[in-house]
Figure 1 (tube, rainbow, N blue to C red):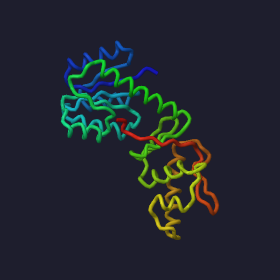
Figure 2: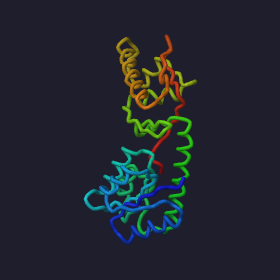
Figure 3: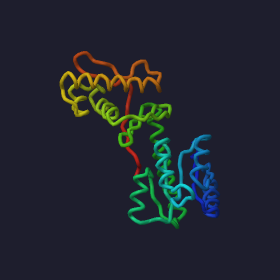
Figure 4: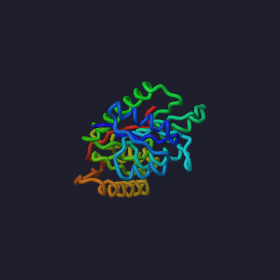
Length: 234
């Protein structure tokens, strides 16, 4: 797979230099000068990696990154900016960046960073061909076909508990503890409601005949392979 890269940079000279060099390295690279233009690209084609300046017109780069991260969790993001204070870096990572590089940057360092993120992206896609991925820090479930499903905190906790249990089967007591719910009739009824709602979400994005099976007088079993993952990459 040839990595598809979009550079988001309002300095036309810097933008052109980066795009030309990336294409010479064998990547499929193009550039835009603002978040609005990036949105149009994301709606029309696959993008694997973004290189984003923070000082953009109209919309700050941090806001752009936050929007992209919510909508497309699989995209890798490198911040390339002259803003280099510890506070700037902290905000960049909290917004969802995978790497934060300061300007000016040596081109070999940037290419090494891209190679590293590309390798991680390939590893994630290799796993997703077989399994579902649960990004516990973002409450996002990604199907083997690449569909991203936004979950609630409770739904994420349920799936995490099931995935970590032997044979992906968790007792009612374990699931109630995971949700911090009392182990009484009201608590069990609440768990049943949450599992039912989660099933409906899962059934809407998969052809699996059964997603979560009720085990009589025991608990629940997750019926598809699920891997846990974490973002952002640091």
